[in-house]
Length: 158
Image (tube, rainbow, N blue to C red):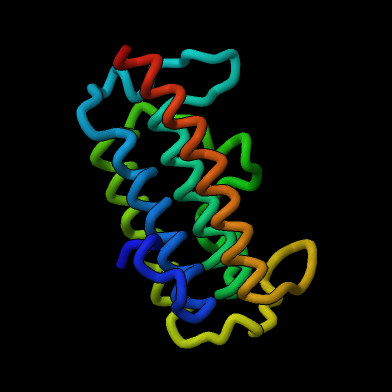
């Protein structure tokens, strides 16, 4: 379902459609680039196209598996900080990071499938929040990092 097709739908449907649209856009940033291009650093930080997808994978796991699901990062085998989530290992490839990303998205969908937006979730280290807030935070993060990815992709393919 496309977000543009749901302007009169309920809030949950609209939020879900917007998040899915940004998830799809984020995954598409690696289409047509080589492994070398996906790893190329074009800015002083550790930000790369592949690193962005790795970070967004981590971010969704933090918000949906840790915050909503209640499983601590250590048990999820996640790095502890956002900065560390951008760092690539020699084993990271477009295929491996994309597969992890799709798995994180599927797990996120399943985690929230039957929860009302007003559900108070308590798994985040800084305290309780509603599922609605989590959706909005994830939407903000996805929009933010899609913008970064658009710029990096334009630089790579120009």
